[in-house]
Length: 101
Image (cartoon, rainbow, N blue to C red; front, side):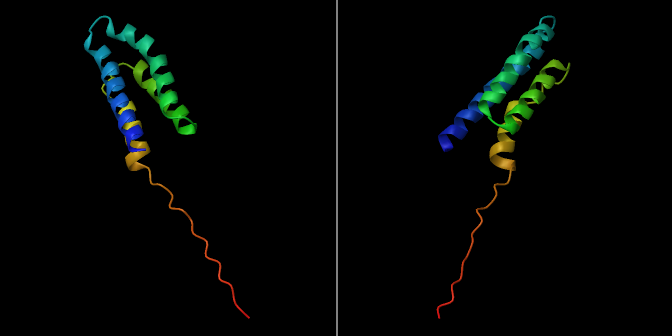
């Protein structure tokens, strides 16, 4: 599990760096965002399956298309949400007491 977490974190940092790099290119950057946004959404949904991955993929798609928001590290924030901030439900323990007659 820890190895998977580390790989996802590394991928997240790399994908955020790619998204931010398009912001650094003055004239071409916005057009590159048009190409990067759908691909980033696809990557996010592959990295985080299920409902939370679908929501995050829509958010990263919108974030990459909106001007001036490339600085937001959406992939890394999703990793933090998944592995650091989200509280895990503790397993419920059911105790059954039997009375001996």
